[in-house]
Length: 202
Image 1 (cartoon, rainbow, N blue to C red):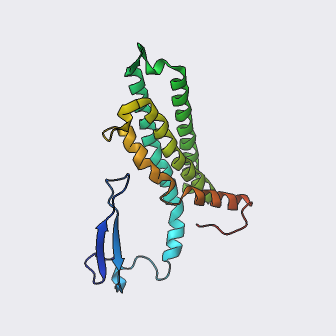
Image 2: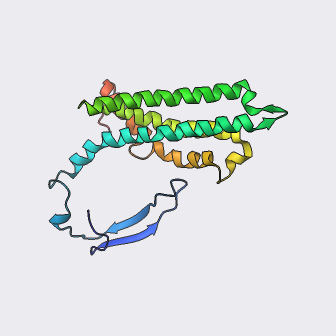
Image 3: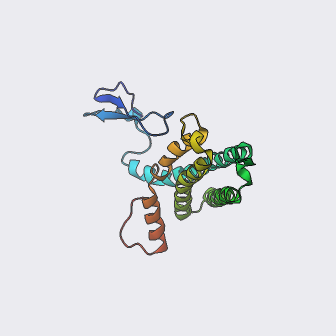
């Protein structure tokens, strides 16, 4: 951990993003920064190893963190569909609406089961690289598919910034990028399956 007032550190500017606006992102420049040993975390030269080891925890967290938001998104949309009336009938009376929401809920429960299973194995000391990658991949894709599917049922209201589902639509896009992109997760899974011969990112 290095204090931001250390000589050589420059805070450049805050970066505007399409989502996750409650979490600031900015440019920071390091120019010949000297870091005293008292600020070092862990053993010297082990930073890369620590980073590789923590990836599985980060990816399990990403999957687990997605579950409640996805569940909420569906619940909000169910409540909206039960109130919204079109041509004298509730939106929720349409079978295609029922089926789409039922399908999305099923997908979220599949993610929950996979994530819980991976966490159980991780706590017991097993290597969950493959399962953590699968859970992260599934979470990232559902963070796009669920808000996108739900947003359609909100009509014009879903296109407003005040709508909670539209915020999930924007924020959720990070799920397939942060902590390892979908393509990285697929590469890891393929490598463990024995069908990818070239090295992949961790």
